[in-house]
Length: 614
Ligand code: AGP
Image (tube, rainbow, N blue to C red; front, side):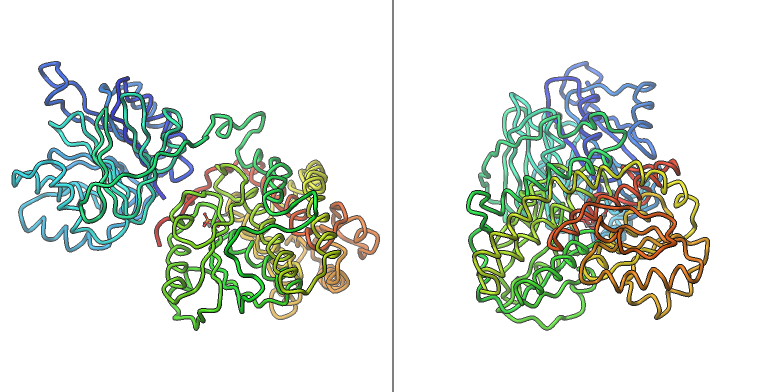
């Protein structure tokens, strides 16, 4: 939700903080701020004052402020904010300060109101509406009792309920940054005579590839030469140093205008990598990681949010059809609170690009507490979810920066496809020959996705019409009913046009009342077993003046009813991979509509890439 960075360095820190925050801007951009230990009145490093600079909105606004009011010093912290407590204004921007303490925070402190009341009763005054300021006030109050910084920090942490990743500067302790994590990710970066703290490996990537992933409850004291790590009980611990390739190339847009555009075009490669991880191309066999007893599973429970939930719905169709294995897919934020009836013989699969989504994590933990075996389909393989499950199913699509998920979606679907084939083979619902056929179908997907992306010019044309719409309906059947949800979500979240995805068979039960000659209707209908039904839905809509954008394949185009406003013809493919091939047209449609509307494609308003709060 927010991004944080801390540097105990040997070089001017201001520009380094900004460089890191730019890598974290996908986590939130309501405001940005930095603070540093600047050389004190005696010019020496000791007793340095802490100064901060904060700006509303994007990092470029903070850069403009720093150009006018440069920030000195080598040790500092930084923050990009997605507002939870307190409006996205300047006083609520991080870093937050109280007395000697200046800090940045990602997460939500649930007991902040009672702590704030206690501190006010003790005579302390607050400047912001944030929960974060309460943490700074508490640490400062503990320092005032004479506690050393690390003790004051630990005493404060023990009083907090909720989620936090913190980076803390304390005036007078200039060669020190304190950090802690509970419920929000935090890593330590090991440099040469420098130490770094960041929300993820990307944040510290410009400075080091030696990364320590702090565990739940860990807190840390960084100075130039050491990272002293303690577990929640206060005992010193050692965590492994990992070498992480967060090469700069992953961060560049190349010759694309937006990360989202690049990531859409990256999908053939991305899915190639994903599929290669789950099949043996030589023997044409599916290959799942150890630990998934697919033969004896009674049921799969998928929990997820947003686009990841939709990928799960696609998985349900394929796994039930191929493997005759019951699959339930639920929105995590509903699932976690409804006391679902669970049985230990089931497998819970969390679907999450970030591996940090709070609702999905909570739903996963709920299932684990009920004795279920757990897995996660995830991009961030060092994330909290990845570290808590029995089996990790990486999607291998590389870093996804665009807030609207594209390549991660098709990578997740690719894992679902592989799981469906592997489960079918393990349960004997397909034989060797069928498994080999289906694996070969999977290996065709990258090429066919690339062909579908080749429809971009035709999609750009129809985007002009769609960009004028007030409402858009997406319809589909079978796995395409899930893609209808995804197409609508993509359009909504980056172009701000209202859109709804519906199972096409549901149209006549209400939504058909929406149909008029002003409402574009996107119908997703590859030439599969649902095609005839979708084609008749198309006729129903056109009979009422609906303007149909018919997205089908080369076979379907031959059988499509006359009268569509436009027919987009994707390459024909086996139903097993149609969700992969049909994704690109709906992603490109949303992208080009958003570009036409001048929207902020990579960082849509009100959104964040990783929703680590409820
Ligand atoms: C996708 O385009 C959205 N940005 C959002 O729905 C996202 O899929 C959702 O927040 C889940 O994120 P996760 O995959 O990291 O758990």
